[in-house]
Length: 474
Image (cartoon, rainbow, N blue to C red; front, side):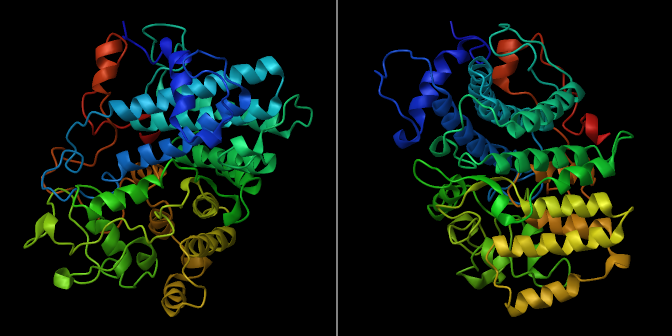
């Protein structure tokens, strides 16, 4: 019987399969693959860090239409117009990863490895946020073998749990007496470097603390403290670049070249960059997508969410922009990014805007330049120089709108962009509802997956509308 496999059988069955699912050189597997074995800390670390990178893609691809980074080339596509979409595969991927991380955490405690325990706490916190930021309430405290039908923790409780895990992870990672040190070749995110893990934990903490900016509990000073202990350059960024074949977004680009229905850039993103929305050309567009080879609609033209491709060629003519393998962001070997220095600079700018406009402005400009550098726009590029001149408004004139405008570009294809859009009430300039939207307002959450409702229906909370706001979005 396979019912509720995520919460009971996952601890045994999925570990075995996950250890065989990635490239063999990630692991040191000398046992008979047909026998159930106890995974080691290094093998669990390989699996956990690999799945974390893949899940950053899974989450990013889920929300990309909602923040209008991507659009479907077919009119009235479900994800574009806010119809209910079954994301059972994404839900399962998150929970399978958490089961591996849960096992790594328990084994680290048993063996006395503060380093593995610290990393496990950080990765578990990250995944709890992915689940709760998409669906709200979700199983955690009663999951992972504790119950066939686990209860759901509230979104607020999950937030508090994730924050506690981060804080505990920071403490563990700072210890120097671990009985077992991180295996550098098994760590597919930071290569076993503890200082980088500590910075990533602080970066994720800053991200969590800014997310509650609408609530009375919001503490801008705490955000800035986390920033002070986080990244100092692009070299600190957390990303995973170990693939069986290539970066998942590069595969989307290659599939698009074969005329599959994926990877088309939204008009919102393209106009954000090409000068239509803000009156200044942003050279990052050249590093995100390729100019249209067929100039029916010009070099830079996106697809309207809900409307599908423009005539006359529709899907058969490449006269609109799409995800490109030429981009440093979505090439075959580009890392799947989890959190970046550029994002942190915009978090810093937002948190400091009221109390310290000078610090906010410095962070704002640093975020733009960091993202330009990450996308490999040369510092001396004339279009970059012109763009920076246009957005260099001085600390007295910096606004929250300007910060969110730039952060929208820096979080391209990252799931955190949907959290920002909801916090910001989708107030980006010219950001409109998709054509044919089935909701009267912007989407704020997902419906629970079909498989989860069939397996654990008694505990799945009802969802009145996809326009319902989550806890931190009130």
